[in-house]
Length: 412
Ligand code: LLP
Image (cartoon, rainbow, N blue to C red; front, top):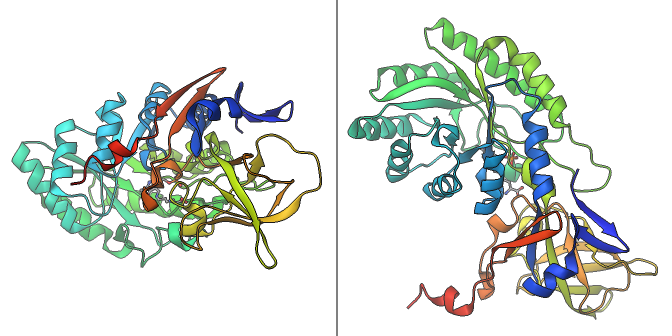
């Protein structure tokens, strides 16, 4: 569900026609819908019992204004770096609602999070546990810790975004779980109060989640038998979103029903780290057609957005639905849509059905809110793509396009 709709043949974000934004901001640019973000925050949170922490995965879309908006909806934050921690705090998200994930947190990052007094460290190795214990002892703090145990569940998703199989780099192997909790019990400055899992991203069926939650429940019970007071269960993120018409991933309510059915009687605080399901369908990337050209047998549309602005197609073969912002009359024909970057992987779509595309046309890439702007780079010295947040009939530029002076100011 999102608030990008056509009105009189022109695609709108809520009540704002997209061409109006382009007049002021230019292209490429990301456009987000505040109403969609609010709705997703609500739809994800509502079905869970009181006390559940929904820690939005900041990596999906980390713009400060978006974090502020989600924070106002009651969401916490799942961060994976000192930078993301800084963003979450500056957005006004309370430290008690922040969890820190990631396989390689540096001592300086652990220290920053200890100083801030965050809710939980998701620890991924015995080595990290020792680093955290040292840092906590030095600072005179106790770190609330959930061990990220790798449940060896196949998330049935793209290999590039699967994280819960035995040989993925993430987490602690299942058969070493007791060993690591014992180690935690013996270390000063560590409170091993939770269990954490995350099996992957863009997961489109409930089965892998159910398997993982069942394994988690068994482990919580086994840990309690061994005297560990496990009071928190963090089940990570990963719920998928529809990228194409006709795709129907499970609704958050069905996901919640399954999780609560499996873990409800454990009496733990449930924690989730959703990213894509909150931000994915709340954003579009807008581009303008620079030119069209025909090679020997193929027709190309060259847009002014490129792989540096939206890398998902080049990186994962992801397909984003394309919309011609202003409807055109005629028969669609197949075009290859590319960007101007000097790489053949700078290809957004092959055989995209477009109606008479020509220079100046606006094209919107759907479902680009998550892992879009955050993965943008300045490759080819292209400015980082700006971001716009629409709210009703108003919009705000929440990250402006940098000038060349700004881009080059950090270099000698
Ligand atoms: N928690 C942890 C520990 C994670 O590693 C991730 C995502 C999440 C939560 C949020 O997962 P989500 O709810 O968004 O599925 N760049 C890729 C996605 C990488 C996901 C990495 N981890 C893409 O563009 O598809």
